[in-house]
Amino acid sequence: MATTDNPLLTMTEAVTGYAGDEDVPDETFRDTALPGFKQALTARRSIRVFDGEPIPEDVMRDCLRDATLAPSSSNLEPYELYWVRDSTTRERLAEACLGQPAATTAGELVVVMARRDQWKTNLDKVWDLMTQGGTIDFPEPVDDYYHKITPRLRQTDALGLDNLMRRVVFWFRGRRGPTVRSPVNKGDHRVWAHTQSSLTAMTLMLSLTAHGYDTCPIGGLDKVRIRRLLGLPEQAEVTMVIAAGTRRPEGLYGARVRLPYGDLIKEV
Image 1 (cartoon, rainbow, N blue to C red):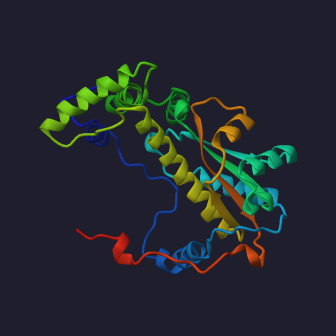
Image 2 (cartoon, rainbow, N blue to C red):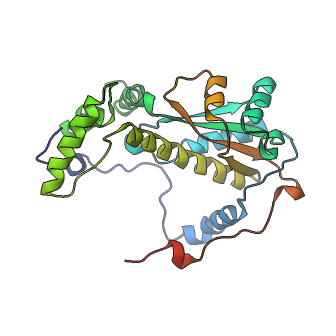
């Protein structure tokens, strides 16, 4: 790992701007996009009882595609979304969610998995997409970021030697100036993956709301049973299960309550 420069700045200086065909937020969004966004944001509530009717397949697929547009560190997308459609698997999944009504009455269930173990596979896939199968050359700092710096940050081993090496490097760099301080242990790698999958989960829930459906993020569940149910390795970890569908009147347990703005937002 380089100790004399800032790879993020070096990479930024090496690339040129990309003028794509995506919608770029501008002043018109206040009139066009903001009202709908505000409505979806305020309409999204955690619904505990659904009517059990499935969401149309084309709508569900569209929402899942929207979820993949969530921001992701280095584009590595260390998550998987399991849309559980098999009836037997759904029953077992609902049981692993402790039989909560949100899970047993939902029209759809999606398991959000954090996959810190997939970083290398995803890096290779992303690089292949970025370079269009190796036909496009990127500046050396970008190549270094993906093939030297990122692997050194993400890789670990059974004895934790990679983590120990990073801890030493970060300590020395931190004495000279601002520097990255993690990952230096298994927990850091887990937090990184769960952060990425949580961003995706929120994007999915907002998309479902915008399509006219309700959701409930379920965190009270048996993560080990769910992982085994899906036949996944130990390093794959459940972030949450998202129940989705159309609410029943009794599915909203109470008015929205939030701490005061000043308790949560600090201006410094």
